[in-house]
Image 1 (cartoon, rainbow, N blue to C red):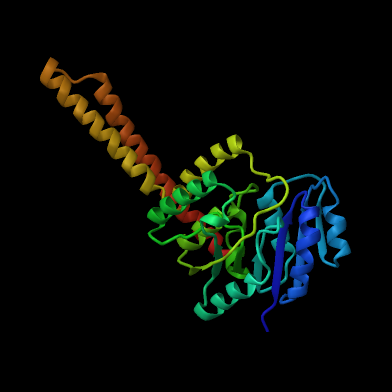
Image 2 (tube, one colour):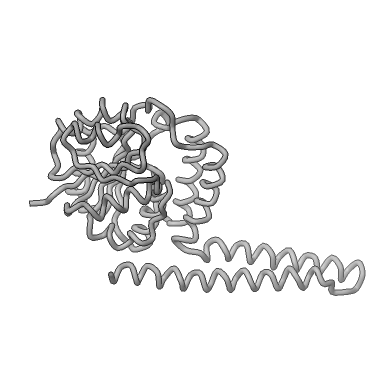
Length: 287
C-alpha cells in the first residue's frame, strides 16, 4: 500500500486555514498531514491543532522553501503532496494529480494554473515568460514553473533536497532538477481560488528575485546554454570592432582585445559551471 503525506507551509494563514483545512481533512485520502508554521504572528498553529492536524513550528520565519524541506523531512509517505495554505488549491484536485502519477508512472505531477489562476495580470505575464524561457532551456514543455501544488515520489525528491533554496523558488528548482535528471514530470490543469488576505509577495523585492530565478533556471539545467551565447556575442562584438578599427585606422585596439578576452573568459566560466552542475546532480542522485 502506498502511503501519502501532505505537507503545507503556512505563515499567518489562520483565517484561510480555518475555512479551507476542514475541506482537506474531509477529503481524507492521505495517511499523514503536516502543516509547517513558518514563524506566524497569528494563531495559525492553534487553528491547525484545533482541526486535529499535525503542526511543526518554526520560532521565526525561515522561508517557504525551508518550511517545505522541514515538512518533507518529517513526512514518512512514499508519495508527498505539497500545497499552499492560502486556500487557492482545491483538496479535490489531489486525486486528479495522484491518478495522473499512477497512470503515467510520473515522478512528479504539477497542478498547472491558467491565466485566471494568477494573482494579477503582472504575475501572469511574468509566469508566462518563465514557462517559455524554462521550456527553451530544458527542451521540455513546462506549463507552470512556479506552481506550489505538486505531487512527488519521496525517494526522487529527496535526491535534490539539499539543492532547494529556503525562499519561494523551491518549485522552480525542483522542476528543473527533475528534468535535469531525466525524471518524468507531468502536468494537470487545475482551477484555483483567489486568495483572501494579504499576499506575502512584495512586487519590487520579489520582482528582482524572479529575475534572478530566470538565470538560476538556466544555470541549474545547463549553464553553457546561457554562457555560450554571451561568449559568442562578446566575440562577434570584438571581431566587428577589430574590422572597423582596422579599416578606418589600420590598427587593432585594446577594446577589441578586451572583448575577445571577455568572450574566452565567459566561455570558460560556463564550461566550469557545466562540470560543477554535473557533479552536483551526480552527488545528489548517489545520496
